Amino acid sequence: MARYARGDSAYGISDRSGFRYRLRDMRREWNGLLVGPDEFEPKHPQLEPKHVKADPQALYNPRPDTPESLGVYVGVPTVEAPRLDRPRAVGQVGQVVVNT
Picture 1 (cartoon, rainbow, N blue to C red):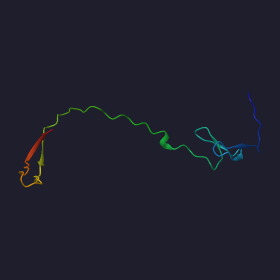
Picture 2: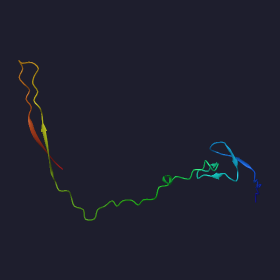
Picture 3: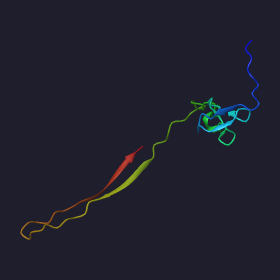
Picture 4: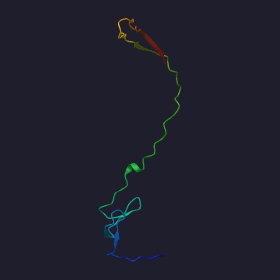
């Protein structure tokens, strides 16, 4: 069995900043770094999110969608020709019905 020296006045070097701290005051972080007490950061809760159950995929006794008509008004403006000897362009106005 290995034995280590007590070293009450031993110093250690911080893995984050390189500053010198008393070894007994240093703390080990969740990522394995040995840092001083003023540099210690606890693990953030979002790094390990809670397990969430999957949503159910099938519906009990499903019904098909009923077809509903969707009316869309489409209008094309008339445009006058730049020259007077040509006839005017004529646009038409209609209605488009989309069944979903």
